[in-house]
Amino acid sequence: MRLSRIRIKNYRSIFDEGDEEYALMELSPSGNYIVGPNNVGKSNIIRALQLALRPEGRRDYSPELDMPKQKKWAYPTITLDFEMERKRGPYKTLLRYVDEYERSVPDAKSETFADQDRVRFYVKHTTEKDSRQELFLANGAGSRKGDEELLEKALNQFHEVVRLVDIESGEDLDSLLQRGFNELFAQVLSERFRDEIETAKTHRENYRTYLEEDILDSVDEYITKQLSNHIPGIQSVNLSPKLGTVESTLADVDIQMDDSVETPLHLKGTGVRSAVIQMIMSFIADASRRAVVFAIEEPEAFLHPERHASLANELESFTSQSDISLIATTHSPFLLTNDSEAGVFTVSKNSVGQTIVESGSSRQDSIRRAKRLLTGSRSVPTALDIIDSISDTCDGILIVEGTTDEKYLKSAARCYPDGDLLEGIHIVSAEGAKDVVKDTVVLNRIFDGEKTVHALLDDDGPGDKAHTVLTSRLQFDNNREISKYSRWRPKDGEDVEAEDLFPDDFIEAFAEKQGDDVIEGFGTRNDGTRHYELVWTAKDDFTKWVDKNADIDDFELWYDLIYDVRDELGLPDIR
Image 1 (cartoon, rainbow, N blue to C red):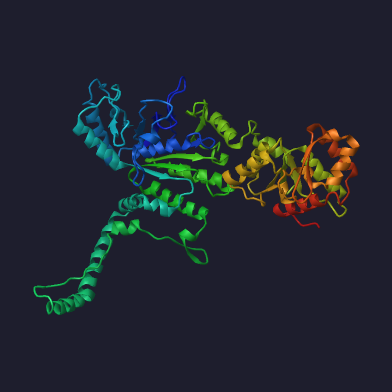
Image 2 (cartoon, rainbow, N blue to C red):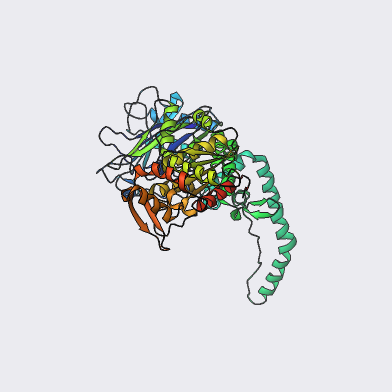
């Protein structure tokens, strides 16, 4: 039994407006990814699932939060379609109950959804906090209701066989256990190891009896005898050990990890803790006899990008079981692999604050749109184009914002007296800071450790945004994989661009030669050095001036930069 379709209407930012309709998602059995910028409503899709399937420990409906502010009297409705691929006993029972209920609904078609091995679960809320209505839609009857007793019986069976496992971005195992995940885990263990659980119950009872009869019994007799001397009428005192049930004990597990030193899981890094959660999810997917819907926010959080593609494979492997559904929000283009059949949905928000959920006319179209949203670039090159641009003999790749950066680096290398400073480095000139993000992501994915990659950015508005995307959203390592020019010339109140690595008097000599109109403006740092803003048309002339007039002293900061970049790329120190 698998979730096959989600329809959300009038929930938070998801509502009808003009030609734009509610969110309708036809899901892939191989997993589904929801992609989009921050604050466009991706999480609202996960929250809608939480509201409909009500996992333990999640909040209830709040009209103030959940009804769309843009529309009056717009009541949230969530409709979930489940399809049966294999008919285990509990699913057969559910289909039978739903079929009986559908046939009790006025004006329903003679062929029920249950006849098609499908159930359509519907949840509606109105203006009151406790206004929840849930039912099964009957084929051809809209949201009309049938017999209440038949509905109640079918709903009880539905909630017995369908569970939602929702995991927030970066959530750890302790948090999951505190809100009911342990109950599901224990239930799965009970289903998978039924005979062993019964044996454990027998051992528990024997253990309890031994404690009571062989240890505590003597204490009982002593206390009873002494107490009866002081308080008449006391016939016996019994001390009984408090032992949790086998099920509750299994639900309250403690995890230790041994990697030369035994360490509790909670002391491990976030990436390790997330990996353990994924493995427990994998066990649940493999062992559960229920229909489980995994709804995961940013599963790649705290994982290095080189692990994202394998993470996608692991997540999608859960869906090999016909009872498992997977929905994940992501900011990582690496999860969107071309060789899987997972569905891809892009999410955006229009001018009136309405969330728009789209899927492309083809899966490749959806992936291209999603990657464009994630990288901030409309021109994501093909792998072949990128590979062709990289020298086979290089060991490391340095990505810079533009050709002027590349020219400064090559001029510095030519002026260096003791060997080739750029030996083993291939420089990729992007088309601005946004393109640096795209090239960094793509090249890391293509070369996958075969060649190391380092990105170099201006410390200005566009550079800061690109740096935030790479480090905070995509988890690239600051300094080791990404640097800003302010690493070598402290910002100290002013932007730091490539030209700031040259001495002030060198730039002033260029302005004196070319004319003051080549400088658009300047700012003074606290240490007295200046940030000169060259007009765009003068930058090409400045690169020629650098190549012709700069000496070793003028390139001092550039040499420090190249030394550090070589070190980050793992290349030999040639100083």
